[in-house]
Length: 291
Image (cartoon, rainbow, N blue to C red):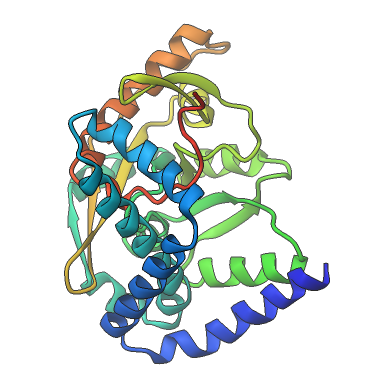
């Protein structure tokens, strides 16, 4: 616990220093630190390379895989920089840095008075999606992994909730997610991280991967539309937020495995096309395909 408290103090220190750094300089520094971290983590970097290879296929060269693996670490550290920098800025300043495409899809769902299941991969800066949505008129709730010590978890929540997002612990009762949908709000769920290990195997980039199925289950049981959103980093510390056409499901009281898997695949197919454009922005460091 003592070592975890040191992490808490380190993050609090970063919360004081990072907002004072100009964003473009901060991203450059974060990228340099990420490159250094990658150099000293060869085993983890091999996992990143393997994931990128599955996205690109066997035609990817070793040099290309190496370059993209290092770029993934740079993107990771830029995300950490954003975690501290964005909450300290007025929302208007953040929105000016974001190019939004397909917002009419979200507006169409909101006009129907329905809750929205907002899903994404840890691609680009996925956190930005749930920061921007409340500003555009969609209040959001999301589960958060419960880290220790409690002081660090509470500080993370304070940072992430700065612009209207509401977080609930993933290890607590998740009925608040259903209630948020009934109120016509958005709930944010990740498609590639399953901290409760309760997901299922489904094809991703041509090979079975164990992925969380909560979004598909909720969509099938409630009839709430699934809205895939992806954020990609652009040059000069800008972002592109792309909102895809919603997926509507007919409510089913007890959806079977085949229906859940087919619903997941409909979502994943669209995400795969976007992620192939720049796999280095997929910030994931665990084996997605176990074998």
